Amino acid sequence: MKSKHVPMRTCVVCREKVGKRGLFRIVRTPQGEVHLDAAGKQSGRGAYLCGQRACWERALKGKRLDIALRATISPADRAQLQLLVASLESEHQSI
Image (tube, rainbow, N blue to C red; front, side):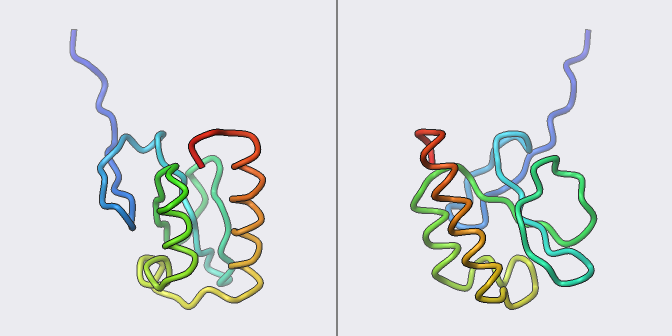
């Protein structure tokens, strides 16, 4: 029996290749909003981040996420993502 194909994605910061379900997807919607896509199916330009805290910090402080999403992330969207990281960090050990 053939094993099921697992789509692979790359973290935009550390460049580690992982199965799609093992990464967090950040999406820029057609309206220009940037937020976490929990289901991984929302339409728009997506970028993937692994669960390492250092990757999230570098993505939010630097321009890597802006480049991957091909847009400048607004300060409000950036602050919302930082709050999300803080809440995920309290729930899980990997972020």
